[in-house]
Length: 477
Image (cartoon, rainbow, N blue to C red; front, side):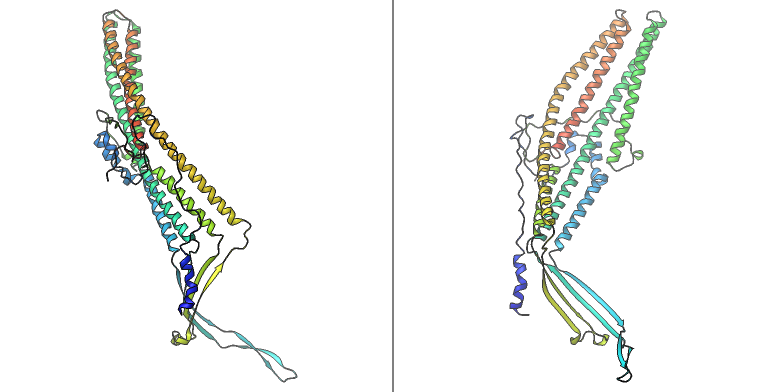
């Protein structure tokens, strides 16, 4: 084939770089210059690909480190997100395959017999007679190829959309992993606070048992009344009931941790330990690389790019589709002559197809694509705003809880001192046992509130690190 004959077929190749539809540009989002709830903390910038590291290690708990390291391997939500990423990558490969021709092979073999009609008799009385035609064999191996030239960039936009979808899936995977890790850390913090509450109640029960014993002795000696014994018993039983309730809460937290690790609750146990995880010091300044490491922001931004590319796909449907087809093969009634030169046949040529009337279907598809893009833009902006809100909320919570923790600590110390003085007064016969019961309840409530505030501070600390995309340490290059 000469160059002159080939030149019309090369035109689509030269036009393939033309892609209709808007090129993607990330829309602007109004963001504050600094966090309202944190003096000199800096504004964050997008870096969702930056490594987050083992952000949970700031709590200095080896048992927690061991548990969180299992989430990436065993958590089923993470496994599902990973499978979605593999599916998106496969669909990306399918979209990229449209850039290349499709080649098919076919082999047919037939054996047939037809009929023919002849005249019999004289010319005056001729009759029509059906005769059997000879049996014919036909063997036909063929190969054909078809390729649609990407004149208007439909394939390119499809690939762009599929690539953005795969990137959004990868961000979803990181979001699922970060969420599972943060939920596990929060559950672990609450469980350790529960253990501390149970230790407190255990010590209180022992103290109340001693008080009950002393009160009974005083009653038997005629120094105290029966009402004092009843009040001491009530105080003891009420505290025992609180301890039982804490055991139920602990069991639920332990079950939640087991599920996060991909284990059946019946096969998982987490023994109690003394002490609670330490509350890490909040840094004085927030590195600007942190906030938009958040994978949910990255996923929303990539879905905008995918929706933008789909507008180009819808717009390309308004233009004609140019397809190049070619086929070659052999056909013969004899296998011995099948591949002889006279048995060969071939064809090549372009096909141009254009929809002339569709009652507005393509226009509606484009309008739907534009509306979907506008929706994705609004979703992206809302995600960014929600991210700032989460950071501000938890900064404010930590600030307020820090002040509350100090006040609650002072209240607990004062309650302990009041209880000591009241018990001395009761033993001296100055006050009734009702005063002792009242100060005991106040001391226990203050101590439990102090532990509750400590737990809330730990949970808020974890939530802040999650809101910043996984820790507040600057990423290492």
